[in-house]
Image (cartoon, rainbow over all chains, first blue to last red; front, side, top):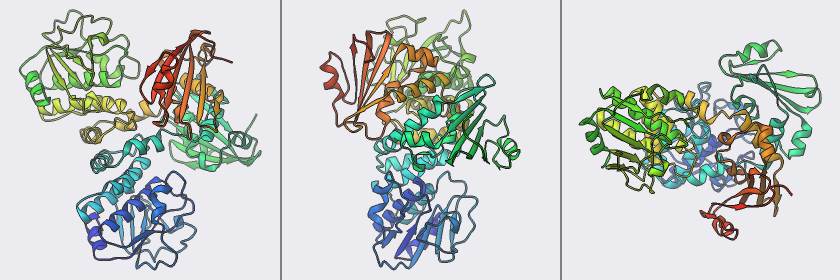
Length: 301
Length: 301
């Protein structure tokens, strides 16, 4: 279904439960918050399935919409979930019980009874924006805030390579609708956890450079994480640091997982260097500019 | 003049020289590059006055348009320059020789013979976009790239508090026109100089926290800069680091300028704390959330 058909589908039904994916990011949570808010404003009953992994940053958008105990929905809607394997721990199914899936991932398996898929969109939030615009002709400031969270996080505040014209056009429309982007940007993009900023400093301080600065090797040990007070939550995209330095064409990050002898190696490159080819020599793989492999050796020395 | 009137003004004239401000940023240089490109595509003769302070990052956009020796322009245009005091070293005047000034700063002194000022715009680049759209009805991909540099840098890639709906709408239009934003974002927003990343790590490593992490004090000595290989070029907005940490409501950065005993103290706060009031107690001042003062004492201890 396209956005218009999906809006009609929603308008003809009621009593929805929206589910978000495991390890939820700003896109799935912002989509759920925006959709539930828009549906309620359209006079519908809708809630979000509790997701125990939602982080503090996004809780204000979703927790007020958690489904109460005993809520019996008529239709289950999955947002930004490419496959049943990504369902949260409290919703284990093969996906055939999902009445509608709204998604932008090319890898969507088509598990739901109906699917609104648009792989041209940088974020799923842009699809929800189209659907709600068609459903009620307007977007409230509260809905706009949630959808801005979705669009801005999935595009890395419009800096990631997936950012396109549509993402900017929708962002502009959301600001017009009253999304408080100053506050949101400060909280999400201009603030880092103390433990994250400390582990980053440790990684950079210990970084080694080779071939006139073209290759950077970063090492992350369990001890470093302990000293920085960093948990897995703060390690998101940490391997990108080595490759964000001017002149580096191959950034290699060696990270201890459980302790010495159990390491993950991440390779991030510019398109000049094939990271996948390098990783495959060590039994790993991935993409041309982002690959990895496992290493049973000490991270240090 | 508004954008439409400015487009007409340009269409009726020819032989332009565009000047950019001292310590030029992405907005002034992107504006100059976009305007000169758009004028050339409209059949006009136009060049940019050489600016010796243009940094490597922005040179590719402007250096191909530097005015040749002996070029005799009929009209001088200043872009993104609020006052004659900001003219570059090779253009010293009281501003009365400037035929047209295009700007978005509320502090614009009105020095030019004609002024196109729009203080609602987040960047001057958005005004140039409007003018060129009115002048020729279309924006080429080369012009769009330069104007995207202007818009994106002045909004901190759409994360600064000045970002508004118009900035996103123009960015969307520039992408539609062919601006290669993936490349530009990677080069400008997802790459840091090695010396910058090293000095940041040193600052964070040495940072002290007080009042349960509500106050952060960062110290930057000349020795640290020397060890990181950092020059003044890499110190842009360095005081923002302390205030970008979760939980910090007042970030204080003490920075040695020439050596021990000659320090600048920068205070960055959330609106909860009045930085201006604090700085004024030490003979300084500024804004509510960003202030500073001079300190004749050692940065350390």
